[in-house]
Image (cartoon, rainbow, N blue to C red; front, top):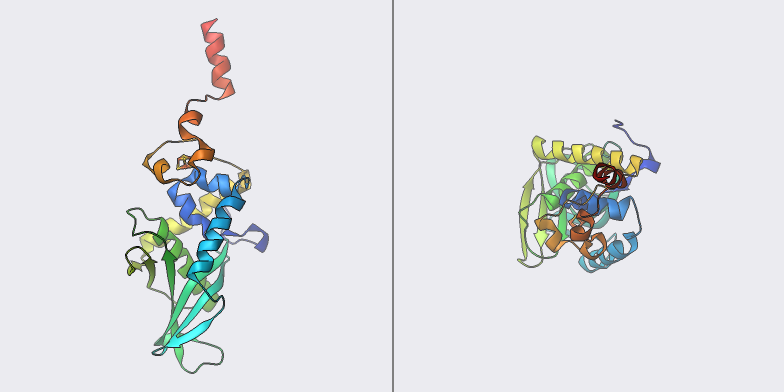
Length: 222
Ligand code: SF4
């Protein structure tokens, strides 16, 4: 398995939330690409609503706020955009061009709805932090998720266990992508809130057996 990726290998960072939610959903969007436009168009609109002024940088009480910041990681093989990165003055941070002092970055991802029980959103913000660490040669201990429904931000502690799951997911994503593999349907509770349920048709697809099994059953019955 590759660990360091070339630019042509990079996958969209935001895909890690789809992958964590359902590997088949991610593959339908990112491997088969046949539904990519629908999903990414909606995501693009949402992203635009969240970050009104791409590349805008503002300063509030000493904290520099950068919106729609492009990020990349050679180790994860991801590229993407952070909704917001907050740079807080700190002694062990990094220098920023045109600014005095040193700063520690912290990614803040904006989400519709309310906090979820699963780890999809936390994985995304952790991947963003790994990108920032790699780009800026700095350590980041936490990121944040802001939910519009609750108007509240929650802290995501970037411990080794979470980082390990992000790296493992990134390796699996590249493996599936390289093989052009779309996992079979596994109906679950997630299907109820899946934006691709009408395309995936989990109930119908689950009943479809592979051709090899059909032939075997036919021969057995003969
Ligand atoms: S409908 Fe269910 S199995 Fe199909 S992509 Fe969505 S979550 Fe995955």
